[in-house]
Amino acid sequence: MEAERIPFSELLDEVIDNRGKTCPTAKSGVPLIATNCIRNELLYPTYDKVRFVSKETYDTWFRGHPRPGDIIFVNKATPGRVCLVPDPVDFCIAQDMVAVRANEKKVYPKFLFALLRSPAVQAKIGQMHVGTLIPHFKKGDFDKLLLPIPKRKVQEFVGDNYFVLSAKIDVNRRTNETLESLARTLFKSWFVDAASNDMPSGWRFGKLGEMLSIIETGGRPKGGVSGINEGVPSVGAESIVGIGRFDYGKTKFVPREFFAAMNRGHVQDGDVLLYKDGGRPGEFEPHLTMVGDGFPFTEFCINEHVYRLRTEPKLPQSFLYFWMSSDSTMDEMRSRGTGVAIPGLNSTQVRELAVLIPSSDVLKEFDQKVSPMLHRIFANCNESRTLAALRDALLPKLLSGELRVPAAANFVEAHA
Image 1 (tube, rainbow, N blue to C red):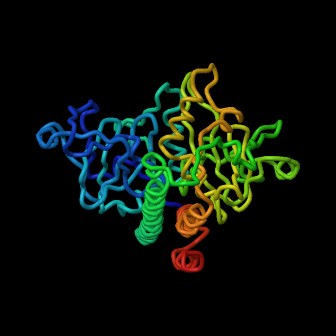
Image 2: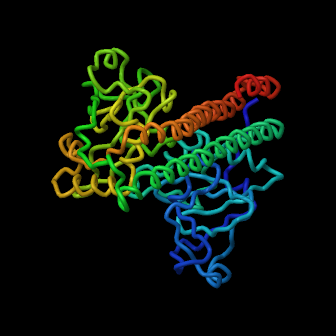
């Protein structure tokens, strides 16, 4: 039986916004979550570049505040992005998004959250703001979004499993952030602080070029790349977010025959990938990641906007990643990559970057301490990717009737 389609607005008890205006901010106080903090790959909002409001503003300026379990829904620029509100709630929400509270008599709240995240509903939302300069999905348009609402048993199964799998992915993400922070702290104390305070005997500064064994870009076929899951993944700048953080949704693909014929750009475990080209005129913001243990793919290549870097055996790849992503090197890359008509780094500029060259015994000891952390990060990433694929496969299969709840329960047990 086909699920009944009900307007989004009729599934809600309350919609909480802040009048669509910019509220007064303060240097400290209650965090103010903006649209950049809402990402569909995360269960809860992040605290990226948050501003603050005073306690008085929090108490008097807003029409209302989110409660635990509410859904934060972005209305402008990236309409349809959603996150759950955690318990406890320690923030308020800025303009261009609302918090919606499900009517539990009409829809299971966790199912509504999973449904809003589904590709089909995300595509519908995207189609409803076509042609606008800045995409909007206004509160007044909620009644135009018709959502398929199946039987309660299906709702609860989908919603609960979506939440449990998302929570495990969230644990992996936070674990990875902790592991990278520990590794970065160790790197800073061993190398950055030592080099700036009292350089040990036998250490020196050199140019990255003298330590590089590989610096190469990839390419793209004449027919371009595709956004469908066919061929071999080709990684570009838009997918590189950082170690353990990769945007699979922006991955493109090249034909396998093109990949087989490439004489450069084939990625190996341990490679450091550097985005080399800028976006806006006069601006350059480098992005880095490190690959390993099948992360982000067991087989893939890079396009012409990305460098593949290796220093082994002269320097461990772990040292290369943390040195390249250190504040001093990032600043040097920014300075070298700007001031030209098309901002970015050419291979000569990369080779000219300064690099600390410590003693080999210290490098070996550092790599032995950090490598297990990196392997754990990669393992968590791969597990999260598997869990996300399982989670996202459930809803369409159940809504289409391809799976019934008992069979879906066996499906989850077999694949989780």
